[in-house]
Image (tube, rainbow, N blue to C red; front, side):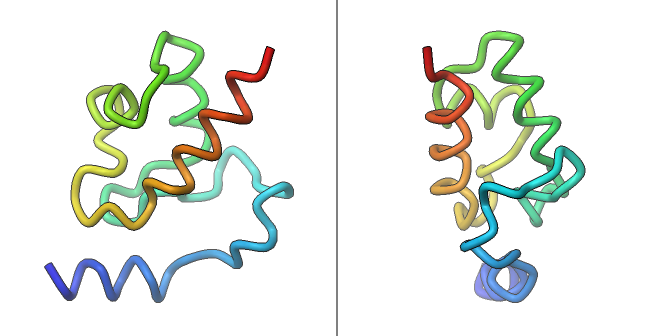
Length: 79
């Protein structure tokens, strides 16, 4: 598990560039889930981190991307 966490941290994209993310950017490195995949899951009814995990497997391995998933949910679900 420590190896997975280290890989997630090593591969983490500069957090200050979150607003300029592209749909092809990987959010969950453990499962190689992209921003576009997460957005599609939200469009198809995912409203929580747990929903995203069920629909995409993002956030279910080491958890390093959960904060990013929460931010994406907040941004995408704005009314």
